[in-house]
Image (cartoon, rainbow, N blue to C red; front, side, top):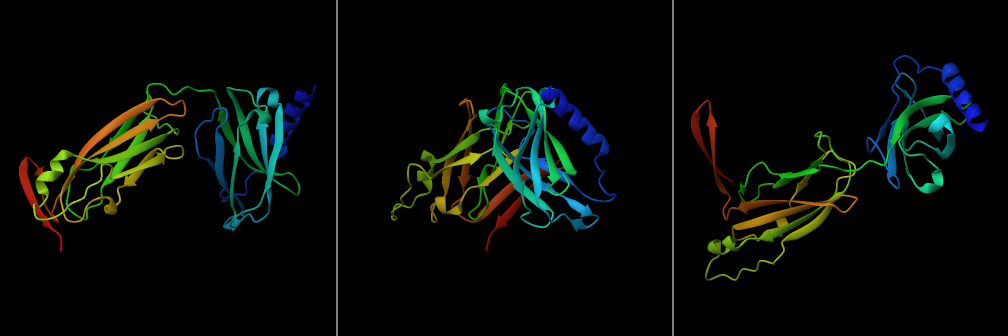
Length: 270
């Protein structure tokens, strides 16, 4: 009986709620396309009261939906951190009593007259991460001194869709070839591990990481290996390795082809 009344109240509210004023902007953006148990939902929203007039009042954040629209809970009362802009996060724990494989609504409503200002669907599924492909790429393999070394990290599923899950453990190790560039009359110290860090992929489709200049010795060239290990939330592991080099000088020769003609370009910094 209670579920039936909640469902009826929701449908009546949808029929009679006010439409967005013409020309206004209202939206909610989630950090992931779908969620599973114990995930954290993060969203940002923008609301206008009229065209070019940001909404400035507090709103109720309501979670609604499920089978028969049985769930109807006010999660919090939220004020804007800037005019028209709202941000909130909450955990999908057992205390919310949500049902798997159901869609719910995040509803922003006026605290004054309960008018629904905007709503978006939240997908709640116990999905499995299958056929993961992890990639780690760079634009080139040889860098001059002072160049920015950019790594692009990405995890996708079998449909080539980004996976908003897991983290990447990055480790940078020197390779034995670096000894050829060392001077016999100079003491050079190169640590066994140049750098390691952990990068989250939970909120981005592709993450770009720039290796710090400070991890490389200033007076020698260096060949090194970057090991990227992707760890899913289920502790599955996928690894990629890149062999890269930093030149001893700030000079570089780049070879390329243009309309079938080979080109060589010489660059020197300074």
